[in-house]
Length: 460
Ligand SMILES: *Cc1c(COP(=O)(O)O)cnc(C)c1O
Ligand code: SF4
Image: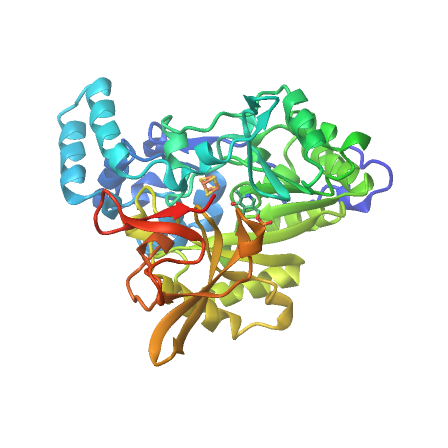
């Protein structure tokens, strides 16, 4: 292919081999050459747990990212392969029995669905609470929670090049999700945005929108560049492809076309941000991963990085410091460190908020100001994005200091509030107000059905 229009950036690098993407799943994993490197106990766990939770990886992840001599602790193995501890022991044994005794597909599905429904498949009412309406009708595939930013879920972008074992979208991948996806029909999307001039940002998300071919992505992006949508200033693409399939930007057949699409967005005078999901510095160490970043940046797009803190994968300050340092060096701007949501096998991955804050702080202390653009740890909770500022003492009492970075009600943002110190709490709903009987953004607190939690009633 000839490089077009004198863009040096689009010259194919010679050092990176082209690869064809092929998903590795429950049904073909045992035919890969890596299968024999997995100890029998872990092979069994994979077969059993993947009846309940989604499993998908690919040859790039297996060949270039996983260190097979370090199973099961290897962080990238933990990130994409399902582990024995992800199901409750009784659930695991039940499914293992069904698998070994050759249970029918229907039997497996019924048993799996029973377990799935107990794993809080739809956390924080994300999908039902924030669907916007146009002329009285819901606009499928959109979420509008924060005044200036609309999320867009294209229908063809609802899978990923590999699945993260902690992913809060797991329910969607096993077919019990509740998102109504955007069809290829973008008229309602454009109609909605035309009526909402307060929106400056559209965040295209998934799954992973970069599993879409360039032409499919173009059908969503081009309408956003229309002069009637001049208020849409920033377009973000949330993606893990830079880590799981960097060939998307380098050697895939439509990689150059993708970069040209990025240039078109930038040339329209808008900011294009690739919100790159990196969990571990190893994902940035391969040649092709670095080449992907270089090529994206050469279009004028900005790459930012955000990802959750997860036990077994990146619960170590040195790992985060290295991640952020590597990012800054490659021109990737650190953005958020998230707290993993309370869904799926979160018992396996979660960390107490206090521990997450300690790791954040010890990582932050190690890096220069250029990496301190990162904020966290942040919970993307029902009332908004809540950042844990840290442990402090007020009037002789130990407290957790928190604040909203984003909120349903913009007036809540950056107003410090305090929770009683709790070394075990892993989510906002497990915290109690330090002073008074409710947090300022709650109308009332009531015991929830689970008894151990309190449900948060929003003022609006
Ligand atoms: C995180 C998030 C956004 C974007 O928030 P920023 O702080 O602007 O990055 C928008 N909508 C929803 C629902 C979100 O969770
Ligand atoms: S890439 Fe993103 S959406 Fe896909 S499985 Fe991982 S966290 Fe979930």
